[in-house]
Length: 306
Length: 119
Image 1: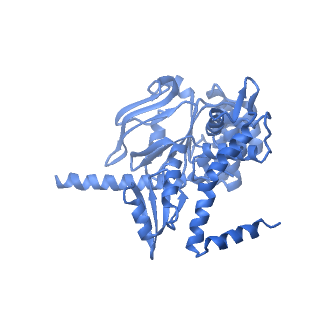
Image 2: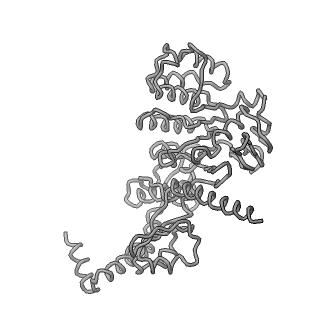
Image 3: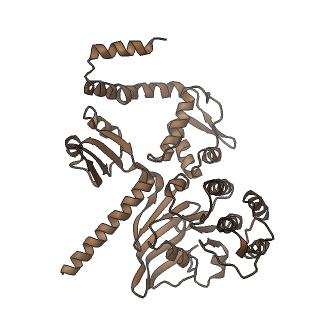
């Protein structure tokens, strides 16, 4: 990847808050015009990373480049960036239309027509005070701002709080439609991996402040599978394979292995009474997080012994 | 429909192949665009494009400049031949394995197939 294809580049980024390391030596890149899922458990460091990328926080150490420059106090970079926070605060007495005109002034690429369409789609009352909107309506307003900004780098932090399944689907459809019309770099931090997994091109998984996994969503999807059947048969198959997870019940077991479920594997299991099943992106992400935690715990104990 | 456990670009390619095989996408007709596929299946347009490009590389589809992607002449036969080769591994081998597990001998299996084939 050369510089014109990279929008975000982070190297050895650490953010320490007193006793806790919210981010610990994280290095990653986000490709131009991709939709990237920023995934991980609560407290993994997702919001800290997004705040740092948008110049709203100071790194303890490490380097951040957004559009090739340091985002801190950098107006040209920030004007091309839109960060929709999970709990965005607006000035007191701000009404919905105030938010719209403020954003129109701030974002060069603000799309008035799209804002009007989304306002109608999400049934947002133009004249209501933001503080009097329901939780779901405030989320919808954030989504509207993120999409209508058409910012070259748009970051959504869990943008769906209080939205029901229908409204979330509206968001996903609107996002895909507008992205198809005007490709741009979108980072979507979310817990609802199953809901969005099809939309993601790239995935970044944080765990406990560290990078647990990153790569193309489709590559990750294809790289593991579950072998299940009688314990003896499954064990004979997985003996030489990288095992991610193992669950047993009675004489039956299900083992997740980091192997492509290709024809070679299918031929090997023929007649053994073993079944191959697919592993969802969600499962891969969860297991990557757990694996990162185990190796972190192991290295801490080792360090203690020294 | 698209499921989550396998690379989505492969599934996009398979869906189009299936439509070419059953004739719903005839040869020399235009296939849906990347954005149409993305919107319909709610997937990333780049992933949909990767599925289409896999079929272009296989010469199942070809690009008409400025218009879009079309089904190549001969694509259906090509896919049929390929699918026949896979049939043995994908269907016959698992069928035999399962029959053995259930204690169905080959003669009985042949009877079952003939019965299943009766209109």
